[in-house]
Image (cartoon, rainbow, N blue to C red):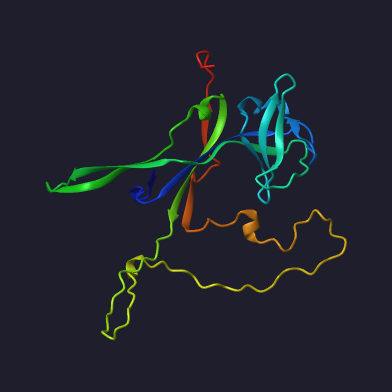
Length: 250
């Protein structure tokens, strides 16, 4: 992993990996339906019991838990409204993601070397390479096909840590000293004007409630998180192709 300044310093950062396959519905799926077929059967052989299907919608996507298969008719049996989501109607051709793993723990690796300079001096412990590493498990690679792999690099907020209480001014009271090097700046709360539109008669009940907030739709980086960066930065994911093998274990 490199940026304009060379290998990235990954010290103290957390790395997660997510991988999925893509497919589409063959027919319209009603909210009460518990099984479906995939268009041209693309993706059927990449689904395993226990996989989570996430619909390709930015706001409030439905999640489904895969519970079984009809191998003869190429049907996928699912539990609708998984993870507290709401079963919805999905049109023929709607896109879905077959999640193989989500937020899996990964490792960062950095290589340091001593570099001899032009004047003969040596600069010690120079960062020369940085890597993202995910260790494949048997369940990750047992089904052949094309997948998308994404890494997320996470920086946690620094904690505010007080030093030992001390009586600095000699008045008998305990004074608490805060180490300024670990103080995290927190922006002031900004109160936005109320821009909620007035209720309008005749709006279909399927419209999102005006009481919803950005957090309802998964906006935010999570408690205690400073920032998150995803890789690759310029595409949906790293394309991974897993080939079938006649010598695979049964």
